Image (cartoon, rainbow over all chains, first blue to last red):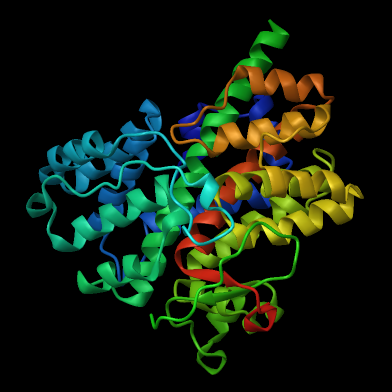
Amino acid sequence: MIDVIDHLVGIEPDSPLDRLRDRRPDAREHAQRGFDALLTPDVPGAVSLVERDAVAAFVTGLHSDPRTARFYADRLAELAPELLGAVRLEIEAGSTTGPYGTYPADGPLAAESDEGLRYRTRQPEALGSRLAAAFEHAHLLVFRPREADPKDLRALADAGWSDTAIVTLSQLVAFLSFQIRVVAGLRLLGAAQKETTA
Amino acid sequence: MTGFTTDRLGFTTDQLGWKPWLAPLAEHELTEAHREALVDEARAASPYFRLLARDPEILHARTKTDNDIFYNTKGGLPRPERELAATATSRRNGCVFCASVHARFAAHYSKRPDDVRRLLDEGVAAAQEGRWRAVIDASVALAATPSEFGAEHIEALRAAGLDDLAISDTIHAAAFFNWANRLMLSLGEPTSDRKADQ
């Protein structure tokens, strides 16, 4: 089994980054266990494996890190190749820069409100209503989490997402937000190390 | 998902409560596996953690990752600056609840409540001295989607005296709060009544 963060950063055994990651052994181990729990669960339960891989391909595509996006697109291509074209189209439709979002107009942070894309799926029929709702929620979490509202959870419930499934979906998007950033950060740190020792 | 009056809260170091928008598991519903996933038994009292317990495997991985990033004090970034990265990330993403908790920790461990207050009141661009400036800027760049974290942020952290482990800790602390913020912001909301939770 590969360690996904090592794989996406390009960390070789016994390299400086490998030794650095070993200084935080629990974080290293459990970042991988988080991936396992969300993407390769023994019992998929409330969220199917296809849904997990499709949301992961969409979320990582929105982050525009080619290596990470490719890794998750390849997973989806293996499990549900028929969805790949639709997911690519949605990534294109949803791509923007964040974080942004409005704060309540009658609250103390109203002056910091920052409008941006409120994405709706371009081809909901290609995804199916359950996955379309998941993509719209995932986009909200990626770009404007400050705008999240109970009505967003009701939209998921209306599309057939149970409370437990919503927790898993939220964890998936939130976890990927973490993993993507660790990968981006460590890759730059590794490049800086090479420059120093060159 | 019942409605209730929403408090209009600004960023604060006050102790806040947090109300879930989905039903947490009841304490009597928690099995041995759920309690193990909570890691710390006292968290069974928290609606937030009992809601996340609906998917125990990812909750367990989340918590073990969190604990090592913030509490493993073997070298690396001093605790106050790890809390600063958490606070700056939460401030940028708009997570009032997360910012309140970690601003209190940052102020307590650094003994610099005025600098923390300025970060909350004026935002991530407010004036800060060298080392804090570098940690805040790195955290803000990592909060962007796509990431805006670059070689210049690593150089600034090094110039501020951080070694590679401390830089890696900064990356992990900031990245982790992109995970935590998205859960806190989208599964419930902060309340001024701290008795509601925690």
